[in-house]
Image 1 (cartoon, rainbow, N blue to C red):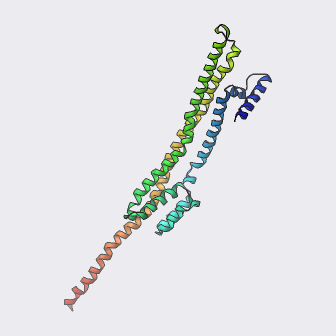
Image 2 (cartoon, rainbow, N blue to C red):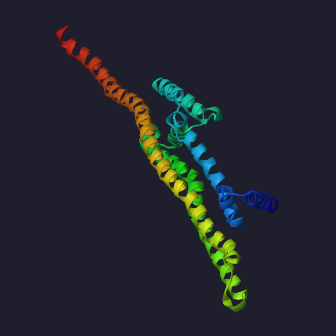
Image 3 (cartoon, rainbow, N blue to C red):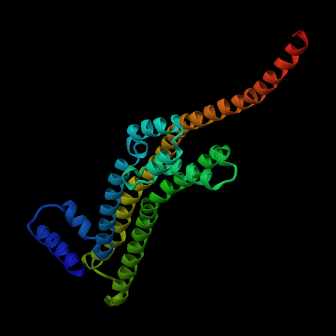
Length: 259
């Protein structure tokens, strides 16, 4: 990394010697190694923003074809097939992780599908927390960037005071203080330039997660409705099946005396 820093500073110095006012590259180079480190962090922030922009979409978290396939399997009461579909790595998504985890829990529970609603809610909370944790890298950059800028400011001021202390009579020429003051000011600017957009995108992505979680929650409610509809049909059929033998037994008894 030291070679890259020296190369960066050399290019900036060459531009400065070529004449004219300071360019953006020269201002960045004035921040020294700390400023260069902040620039590297900014590249990481841009990469995370691009990744989250692609990742936090409804088509990625809950693909329509996966939802339709789970609807078909649950409508046919093929719970084992639905669980295998969710466990397949090729179908890994927010939706399949939530439904698959709920089905696996119901398979282990003595209450069976009666616990499906609670299992869905608990699994959904776990997956939303997982999405929040994915944004921690951007949150770390938003926190560290201004702190690095402050560090550069402190280092620059220390060097400026050292220059004053080493000068004859306590007076230093402006050009002797320029480099230290540049580090003090530019690093603060760079840190804020990185931290402000990172903080804004962090809030945006976390609000986006909440919105997407609501949309996926509506989809899981539809899947839950299929399970509960089958349970209600089975519950209504059981009393009817118990009543039929009684009616059949009562019919001969009622017809006997008449004969």
